[in-house]
Image 1: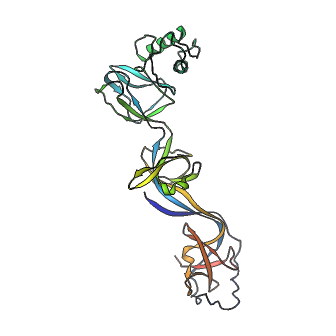
Image 2: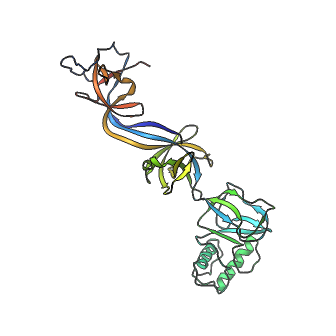
Image 3: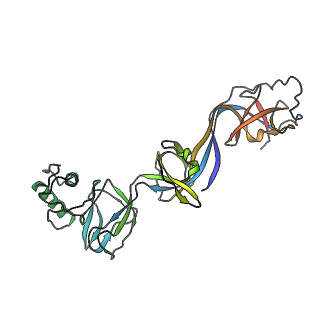
Length: 342
């Protein structure tokens, strides 16, 4: 997995005005000799320093699942990959007879006809028929009534099925909502039979998929806010919505699947588009920091910064975004430190 450490500095608040140089009292034993006059200066600032992990991801679609055939015959048409199908639309045709999408969570597991009762599958069918405009006189319950028969026949006439008043798995596929065809597993002219894989479908919500090292799993907690860098420039906010519970092998290491939902979906983001996801790793609040290039090595093996023509010893802390946390007696936001001229 490609990993790069980067940093973000947020809420930086520098003190107004130019501060005087630190009063050193006497000559410090740990300070290096005063360097030549700096070629440029910058201010010490107070703010938040955040380190992040940059990970490679890709645009995917949520909720992948397989649709299997429930009838025997020859495929005479099939929905194209990438197409969005809604309730009432045809997934594919076998011997020119349509197999139609209806909304519901329960697979159709028995023929539904007049007199069938005691099942949520009947309610599911009646609800779909009403949504499609064929259930004006249908009561949505667990009984397949004569009114349901008439609604089924009206629906069958509209889609081009024999008007039998009976619905079975060779006519309808129940799925919870609209779907996107990810892949057609059959082509026109193929023979199908019950159980054969016909489609791979997904939901229509775009997600960013990450294969995250198990060791870094704590960084991708559910609900965490992230930033997603898009190809060609631009950044979109996102939020971690799924974190896999089971590790899997990936490129010689163990990873978990992580899903990130984009706050705003931009047009042109095709399936499998590569993106970069910035996950916040470590953050330090309300600290003093300077650019890394302001650091100078001291004789004692530590670091200092140049203030008013003298090298003042400091302690370093967290690094991130080209900056470094510093601390030491007398340091204040707004003080000028030397940096190399660009």
